Image (cartoon, rainbow, N blue to C red; front, side, top):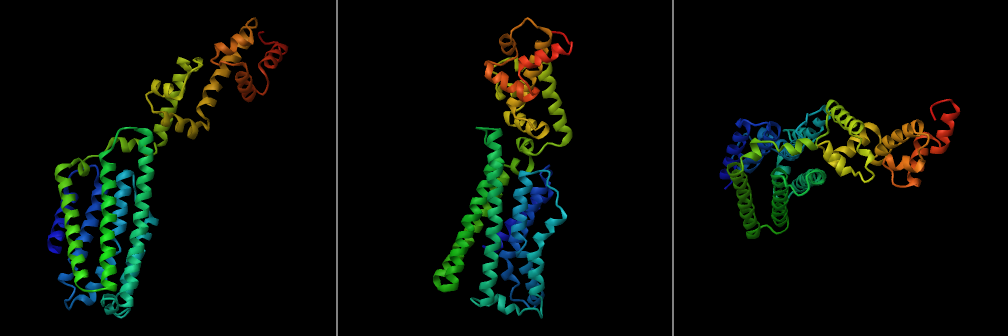
Length: 355
């Protein structure tokens, strides 16, 4: 079973490395994870050889790279603009440390490979802690990204996010089997431990077969990019400026703010954007909330009416400007201009401007 699992992993990784797809980074990280898995599962083929003195440290070090590869597969799938930076090399530290400590002359490899020895238990605990640290980071990543996706595309599921969630859940299930198997081996070695090892191998075979079937039945998961996921990524400055310019020009020319019942959803529809996109654009680019942005244009419109229509009452002006109550008009006017509408009209008249 180990040989069969290793073969499937190598076959899948070869497919992921050669398939033409804009998803190159996710495919490469998943291929790396599968190759490392194949090495780990088939280590018994050469673990008893004379070359173990130098192959052993390499095997131990490679085992520490599995979860970093698994994590970056998830990260690069959710964020297609992922670019590895210098600080990402910190993920290599456990692997390098394990390589150095397990080199001949550093620590007797027998301490790390002898069944149920203190060295084995310590290495096992470290491996479990590493796994759960990375899987926790993966689950947090999926939770945050799924939350953002639902805010933007309510009721529109993404096959990619479903696939990632399934993969994370299956990983947790497989780890639970491994924990039960290892705990049994440490505390009650015997027939039960052997049975759990066989069951664990069957689970691993089932998972690799499932991934292989995914590549056949849903090849778009490995070949295509869900364009909706790209829209969730932070827009660059040029795109942000263009969107803001389109929004401001629409408000100035079409004057939607004159509608007292205007909502964020209605304005978003008018400029072909989502409410979340408009809200984030106003907050990040102008530092304004939606109502502050709209009321600002209403006040500018009201100021012009106050100056050019001296006979028009303030009540008529506030209604014509998109306000539906005198209190809200006075509050917004004073907040922006620094005085009440009546005081503003008197001041401008005193300065000799049209009244």
